[in-house]
Length: 70
Image (cartoon, rainbow, N blue to C red; front, side, top):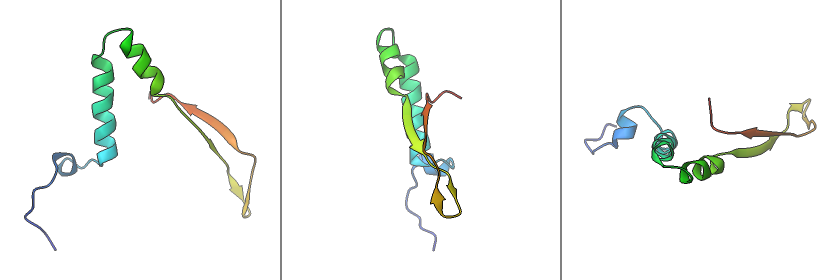
């Protein structure tokens, strides 16, 4: 059932809130002056581990680091 309620502009643009939030955060980080910019960019790094599953059993976990740069 459709609603006549206002829709957030990020939703109307076809984005999720996380995508919108990441876009805004990236813009803010790029506007900062040094040394604040380097400090903010260093906090952007993400580290995580994942395991592939084969025949219902987890394999050896792998650690991965992403910097957010594409």
